[in-house]
Length: 114
Length: 247
Image (cartoon, rainbow over the protein chains, first blue to last red):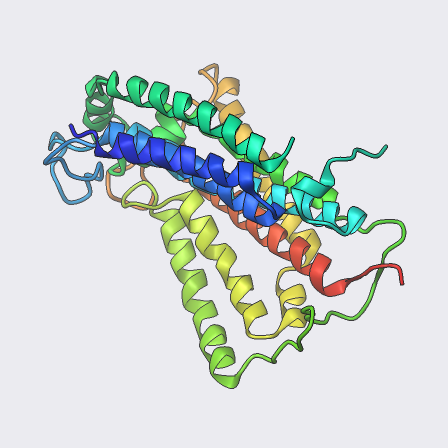
């Protein structure tokens, strides 16, 4: 076990949050949120990793060979697909915000209107 | 709040958060008990050689049902947000970009993309149906399938895209895919087994028809993911190409 994936995960999370906080553009903000989310991929795959183990596919290797954790990989694979659709939802919100107000800078979108 | 105060507040909060997250990560001691268990049983008990698919659609199939409906709800939200507003009208589809004209797709791009559509569809179907045997399955194959309409659009054929993948067909495919997952689970209950219990003959590991009802769920998820992604593509293209703001 190594600490590197955990350090990368923490760094990705914080640097993504920095992007969200300082963002001047809604599309940039949504991409920063994707960066934050990708830290969970690194963290979970880091947890599932085992030195010297193979991929958990036993099509051409005998069952019982040491393999990495398939559970975190299953989480990743559904999450990657779900994340894309959630990003699309956020981008649709940005499109609507731009249509209603003509602005895309979150700092200028402070006022709420009924 | 000025941007400087915001940065200072963020710096303090982020440093604390990073320290705590780092400390929490240092305390993680991965346990391999569950992973080893899954890796051991997926072939003998489910005839599934890809343990990731075994987790997704059988051992933790209920969790994936939830994930799938998150996806379904997001796509539904996009459809709701990008519907035609009362003051908008539809015009002929044109690519538009602010401050410059949009170039027409070159012949090289058109030939390459149109030539790729067939192989991409075939590859997508291959990935969907071999989820039990090799890396792949409904999620991955569905995304591969959804790139085929995107290639048609890149070739500059928006009209053909609307004929190949009409809105009603894509919406129906997505809905059937999402519903079929639940129905496959409920059939197990009709046979007085637990929800999402594997109820088809398991077949032989490595075959296309192995893993019992996992093969069916793979197809359902592939249909839903492909439908959902193509629907997203159609919705955003409609918003940018067809919609005209009130003058």
